[in-house]
Length: 197
Image (tube, rainbow, N blue to C red):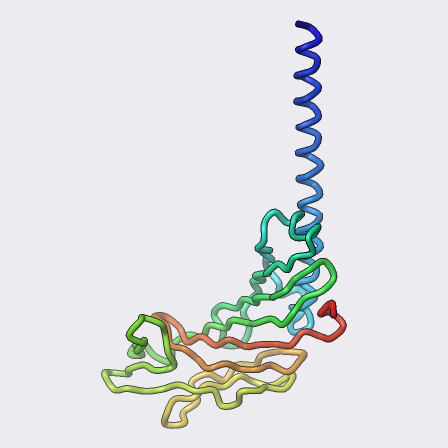
């Protein structure tokens, strides 16, 4: 009986130790990918604007061992006219990352702006203002470092003129009008040295 109890206790201790080691290894794997995602974002905005990093792809240790790509969601403190900002970094590994996107949400020009979604409910760049249809477009689909992101309505009036405070060229997508904001996706190319190719 005593030998049995010793064997059971030993097994429990070993399992607990393995679980603890695995948890530490998994956290270490996540930390390495968090650092890669932060490096991506820091090529665009200062480090002190990063507020949180969330690595998707669990368990992290499996993604590391199998050399699989993770996706990172990085929240940053908004700047300019933006009310919310988030980066989505693709193809994140321990020492590399792929192209990434910056989601910017701006206040609507007025409370009268109502989204005009597609039949399937997806948002578009169209809206109604006091019942009249309108459409929003970006002034430039490419913005150089230090430039501003500008959105105009169909009359040509600028409704968003916000500094991107970016260190690299930004590729601007079509704006879309949501219930409480106008959103834009801004894409950035990964530096060739960080793609792992």
